[in-house]
Length: 88
Image (cartoon, rainbow, N blue to C red; front, side):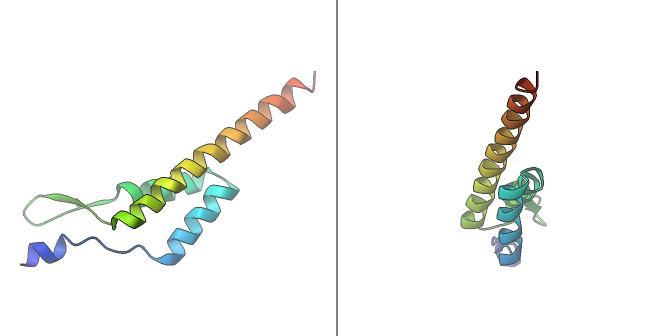
């Protein structure tokens, strides 16, 4: 019974989700780390079994933060390359 209770996924705090999305859109790298920590965080139960820490809906938010962060970082890299090409 205790292991079943411990195996229940938690909800992530709403402020963590908001912070993760803001960082993903504005900077990319920090949003990538927050998204990954929400998406892949696990906990080990007393019987040794590992389960995801957060609910599937929160883990999907983490995955979306990862995608947004990669997109923003990619846009930033392309912008730097294009800006440097047109300098010469």
